[in-house]
Length: 238
Image (cartoon, rainbow, N blue to C red; front, side, top):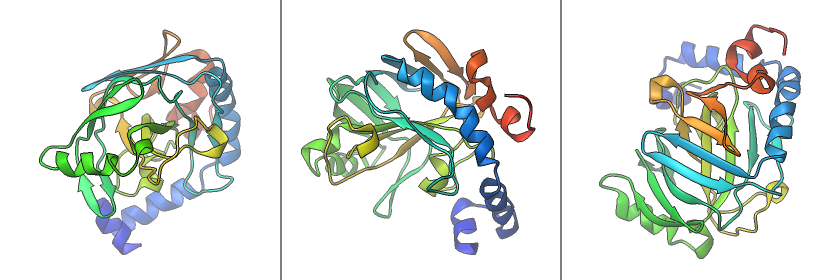
């Protein structure tokens, strides 16, 4: 625990408190709250994400939609799918720190054409980043798209099992697709890259089929409002 706290830049006491809260979240309540999002995503074809350094479009049509609500992992709290493999277009910039095999990367920026990563930047580590995506052909395609939902997680702590669950975040994952949400991509890598979209991190918007569903990390439609942190934590009606 002290080592994890140090990596997160937190005192051991503060980290233990965070760990206790995320582990004792009412996951049954979270499971109920995710149902409208799962249903909405199942009806969705086109996704459009905007934010600082990000203007990204892709399809999730006919790909599985999977809620993660404490049945396999703790901490938990996300709904994931995958983009149609060749549908990704545009650019995405990740503002959470990323680590690959012990090497840290900051401000990773990826550009896509016809689903493929055609340019990868990360400051003075851009060459190392490109080498990761040259691991195999599937490493330049995306295997997962997910929305983070855990109401007790608000900032990255350099542990992906926590960071990918941050409320108001999304992650976009180069590499291998999961069997439950399989877009056909195969790779030896599966690298979750996280972008936080609350106002403290620059904000951002997510649209499903042209309709705004999340702005600055908060769901804005009535059917999805039960997933906002204040509703999940304070036990307000869903």
